[in-house]
Length: 263
Image (tube, rainbow, N blue to C red; front, side, top):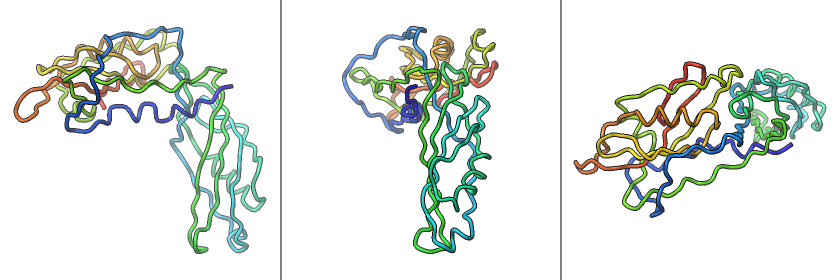
């Protein structure tokens, strides 16, 4: 089984160039394209509900600290299954177990389809400088997803000469017309979900061109590109003059009635 945890920040880090334009290079941007569907996009499980443990009174009184390490499976419904403690002081184990059994995750997904993955959780009990201060630190790793290898996406290509890259969040505020993507029929049957991150040029007239997918399930990429090509924006202005800019756009396929959003 291959490690997929390295993809956690894959989508988050894209498109944060800032509100003011700044050119990152002179390379030419590739034309709009869809990568071979023989590849698979893997998104790791994400913790969405965390309950901190209650520090046992006896452990406090004896100043017992340290990590409780657990192995578990993150199921397709986001719950933790088969939890087993592999290391940790006996005084801390029950508190750690009681807490993590209440945790919930957005499950790991391969091409948007939920998959069970194994995880190792290290929950650290620390009393800090005084007995009244408790800190619970979480670290974890994930492996599995049917042996599919997760490869970190390549960095964004530099924009063409003379074209500035603007934060996707800034351009989201400029959006005037949005066409929703068509949810692929084959994705409905397997309840596939996921976000597609696109890199696009928004012209000085507000049209979208040169769209390419940079992240997200391949099954959704063509639908996302076709929808975004029809979007229209208010022109991006610099000192009163409209400018061609490049920005990232995130299209969310959360349900069969997917709604596109720009970030």
